[in-house]
Amino acid sequence: MAIQPLTLDGVVPYPPDTVAEYLAKGYWHDQTLPELLFATARRYPDKLAVIDRDTQLTYAQLTDEILRLAAGLKERGLRRGERVVVHLPNTYEYIVFVFALWELGVVPVVAPIAHRRAEIEHFIDIASARAYITVASDAGTDLAAMAADLKDRWPHLEHTLVLDPAGGGAEYDALLSKGSLVHARRCNPQDVALLQISGGTTGIPKLMPHTHHTYGYALRRSVAERGITERTVHLLVMPICHSMSTRSPGFLGAFSVGATVVIAPNGSPDAAFPLIERHRANRVTLVPPILLAWLNSSLRTYDLSSLEVIMCGGAKLSEEVARRVEPEFGVQLSQSFGMGEGLVVSNPADVDRATSVRYQGRPASEADEIQVIDDEGEDVPPGEPGHLLTRGPSVIRGYYRNPEQNALAFTADGFYRTGDIVERDERGFIRVVGRSKDQINRGGDKIAPEELENAFLAHDGIHNASVIGVDDEALGERIKAYLIPRSPEHATELTLAKLRPFLRERGLATFKLPDFVEVVDEFPYTAVGKVSKRLQREQN
Ligand code: AMP
Image (cartoon, rainbow, N blue to C red; front, top):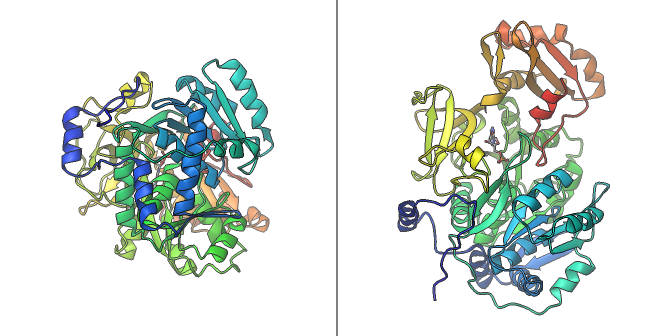
């Protein structure tokens, strides 16, 4: 008998005619995420699915472990539609947990490991979570003690499962010892599959309800656009719960075609380069600060010759840096632009170089609807910057249990207001100009920080640059640049007096020149490793 879709309170549903249309046109498939994995496992049982530290699992072994973990979780009484906060580092156990929960129809709330009590407690509260899964400690924080405390505080939190700091351990083994489930459909593909965490550039992150349908659509698009095949060996370095690691193309994209995923604890050259050499990884997805660290790393003695494509997205990649990637690494640069809420665009593999360094991609399907509008809501012509709104088979219709934010962030007809300013050319390629709230207004002159950052990055002495507006009584805002020098010796060159002529030479108008520069060793980062301008603004 068919399993009816589950209604979760606090989830904004798709209108029934949209559901019918997306299914009829083949944007959404009648397939759950475990069904996608098990189909591949039947096709390639003996192929390596995942490599993590000393563990290497074939597709047959991975699906077997998932069914054993699912039996253990079922024995704990977890049922379809219930929510479980999963707060794990980059480990293969994360993958086994989310698939085991999906097999049962349970909804993981997937939190980056960098999150701490304030965020985790909020997720447990808002999602009325029945279980919390974490590791005993992370970067010096005692998460086991935190878990015990949270369990005492929240009566609906019945279970806490605490793995060893690097994954595995007695709790994990105990769960695996309860026998094995038989793979079967236990939920409807229209059900919420997971609650993803929003990037959180403003205050406490929001929860994004994604269904098996929205994720299935997004990963199929990504796999097709990026050319992922069964010969792909994908090094996963970004936090494992981020959409870049999960579905764009991420481990789900890889598993849909029988590729191999190699898990790195993080993206630093000393963690990632040895793994590329050892496992001959040919693909990786990075955010710009990590790509910069790779480009300027002294560890390039590792054999990285297996790398074919570096995918980069998640934040603005300056053109200056983009131009260095192909010559310096001998790889193809594949930019993308997207958001946890849904839309992801990327540059097709055969795009010309001028486009690949300047643009972040274009929608792969007419179903990915895009509006670029001015402050009055009118469409802007090609080449002009405007606010990006989007709707489509991968885009959520609202945040979970958040009507106030939904009224601001979504239009009545279901478009998501991304908060991004973009330009679109005649061909439909998108260039991200910046975030609307990052734009600096200096006495009426509008400055896109990215333009100034790009100019800074052409300077030999600058490793990275971040430009923000700081409050000013006379002008409203003035321009401040945080700069990381390439080496300590370069720091003395980075003064206003020396940098202003350099920027002028690069054609920047006088009103765009910085009022202040501050040389720093590091920037503050968000939980997924993007530069946090919010924290930088708070420092002023
Ligand atoms: P997240 O939900 O963490 O994926 O963050 C989504 C946001 O990251 C977008 O709304 C953009 O502001 C930003 N973003 C993602 N990709 C890019 C890109 N290629 N260029 C500029 N900004 C980006």
